[in-house]
Image 1 (tube, rainbow, N blue to C red):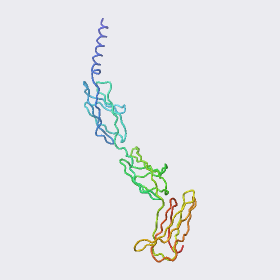
Image 2: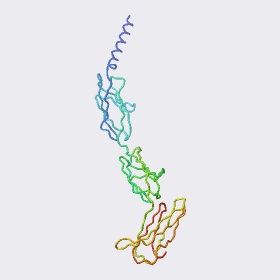
Image 3: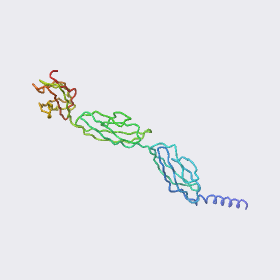
Length: 274
C-alpha cells in the first residue's frame, strides 16, 4: 500500500513540475536592431509564464537573460548569424537570421578609353583592396580607386573589378568597353622645305590594314591641309620607316595626324632629314 501511495505522489510531483513548461508560451517578436560590423541588439517579447530567456547563437548557448533584450558583441563583419531565443518555461523558441554590416559594395565603374589604354576609376564602400581582371585574366590587386590598362583599338574590352573587405568578403562588377579606333596627332614647330615623318606602325591583326596620314600647316586663321596618304601594314607586323609627306614647304608649325581602325603608331617624328 505504501509503495502504491509513494508512486502516485511521485507522478503527481512530476506532473506539477511540468505544468509550467506546458502552460508557458514561447518568446516571440524577435528583432535585431543597432546592427554594426561586430555587434547588434536582440529584442523579444516574453510569453505568458516566462521570466527569462536563453539565448543561442548558431546553436551555441550564449546567456540566460532576465529581460527582453540582449546586446551581442564580438561578431565578424559581413557575416550571417542565426539567433534563437527560448523562454525559460518553453521547450522551443523563435529564431532570426541577421547579417552584420561591413560588406563591400559592388564597384561603380567609370572609364575613359583611348585606342591604346583605358583609364578606370570606381567607388565602393567597405573595401580595402580591389582585384582587376581584363578579358577574364587577372591583372593586379590595388588599394587605390583607379587604374589604367592597356588595350588594342576597335575591340571589346571586358573589365571586372572585385572589391574585397578586410575579412575577405567580395562584391564585383563587370563592364564591357568598346575601345575607339586610332585617331591621334602630333605638332612640331620650326619646320620647312621637304617634310618627312618617321614612325613605327604595329598591326596586331592577322591581315593587312591601312593607316591614313595627314599633314597640316598651322596658320593664324586655322589649318591648311598639306597632304594625305595611305600606308598599309601587313598582318602581325611592326614597321619603322620614313614617309615623305610634302616638299618645298614654308617655315612654320605643322601637325601630322594618323587614323586607323587597328594600327598602333609610336615614336612619331616630323623633320626634313632622318
